Structures are given as structure tokens and as C-alpha cells.
Length: 356
Image 1: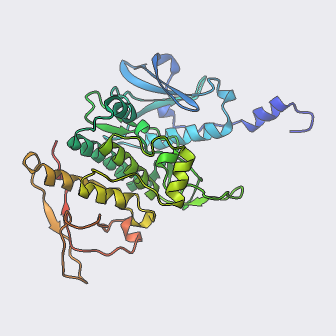
Image 2: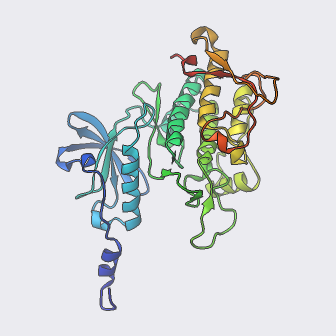
Image 3: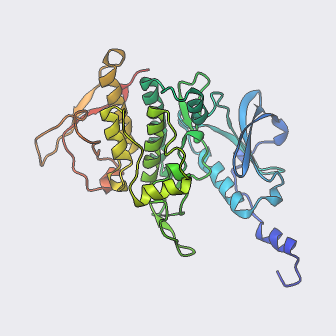
């Protein structure tokens, strides 16, 4: 590049990007039949359509011409495709494939029940059935447990990224545009959406260029707590307040939504999940078990009796019941071992606690 190059040529060189997406994931655009627009994002459009006689959703990156897409968005698109292609869980939207020419797009299964955000709006101000709320929360928690077990942080967990099945009884996590593998503790500053953003992500003061924020997978636990609060109340968090002001209030003043009229055990869970200190927030493994135990204790006639095991604290022979404790307990697993949390006696509910 020299001084004689035009601005357009300089931009073309700067924008060059060689895609390195597994060939097995590449879809021939001629086999896609686009139907109707179902969602719009800042840099993408989502359409319903068909691919090989299957109903699908297409996320098309804007602008339509690949050469006009900026370098950073190409990197982000490739990361999203490659990361989502590795995921296989019943509560995560399944990636079918992608294309990079002549337009960048990815194809996923189509969720006909629309977003959780639209579902809540359509029923507001009437609250959802409590049992359905917990079922939705369990679906989300299981998906996030799977992601964290595989070293992936979603970083943008919110109702508009949660999709419902046709019967509106199940939820799947979608949109991995901001998702990232948790390789180091230095993550991009302020990734996510302000009202669901963990306080440690938000910068109360300006950062110098190139500086990073230190946070980990517990940012997803905070976002989950706000989603759970929305499910339980069917209200918008911090309604009527500017997004930036909300993020600042959460980070600087430790402000959280009201727990009025929320069942005590679920209020305990919320307070634990949105703790200011990320180390005090539970892992999703623990959240899943806590929610299943709440289901069993609230609707015992409709649930299978839980299998339990006693986790012994060799330093303290006194035990306490998992459900009756005043806070969410820390379970020792491959992540929790990093925390110096004690291992108290409590009863643990296993996978067959919850039966639909």
C-alpha cells in the first residue's frame, strides 16, 4: 500500500479476510428458499425459509455484498459459525450450516414459537404460570450448564435470544454472535446488552485504548438472574430507565430489581445469582438442581420422588438440608473447585428429580 492508492483500494485491502469454515458446514445458497422476515438486528436480518424440505431460519449478515462487510464482522461471523457448530444440546438452537458467498448467512432450525421476549409482551401484565416459569428457567439453566462445561460464555443472555418451541412449552438458547471460548480472564469490555449486563463488565470509568476487563463465565449467571426475574414477574427490568443508567446503577450502586411478591426460595436464588461478587454466584449445575428441588417441593404429587445423596463435610459433621438453607449452596465440581467454598452437608437432587 502506498500514498497513490485510493481510499477505496485501501479499504479493500484492510477488509480482506480468508474464511476458514469447515467445508461440511458450507451450504449451497441455491438450495435455500427464503420466505418472510422474522427478526432484525443491528448487523443482520433473520428470515424464515426452507432448506432440503426442512423449515429453517436464516441469519443474513448485512450488507448483502460480502466485500462490503467490515473485517471485524467477518471475524465475528466465522467465530459464531464454528462455535455453534460444536454445540449439541436439546436446549440450544441447532446450527445446520452457513454460506460466505455471495452473501454471508448461517442457517439454523426454525423455532416457530417466536422469542421469549415477544411471548412475555403478548401476555403482559398477566404473570406466567409459576410451574411454566420454572420449566423455562430449567431449560435455560441446562443449556448454560452445557455451555460452561464446554468452556463457552454466551455473554448476551436475554429474552430476545431465547426461542420457544411451537407449543410454547420449551425454550432454546440462540444467537451466539457474542459468545466466546473462555480461554483467558481478559475479555472484551462491555459485551452484551446493558439491562442484562453483569456489573463487572460495565466500565464505570473510561478505559485506555487496548485495555481489557477481567471477568469470567459468571457474567452469564447474572444475566440469567434478570431473565428469571422477568419470567417470575412478567415485567420489564428497570422499566422506563435509560439502558446506560441502569448498567451504571447496577455496577456503581449495586441496584437490582424488586423482589416483592416473589416466592422466598426463588428470591434467595435471585439474590445469589445477581450477587455483586461473581465468586459468590452459583454455577449453573447448582442452579439446575436448586430449580428441580423447588419443583419437587412445590408440586410433589406431580413429580418423581428425588434420589438423594448425603455430601459429607469431613471437617463439620453437622448437616443442613439443601432446600431449607438460607442461600444457594456451592457444589464442588471442576469449576467450583477453583473457589475456596466450603463443602457443607446437604441433600442433592439428581437428574430424575424433574419429570415433565
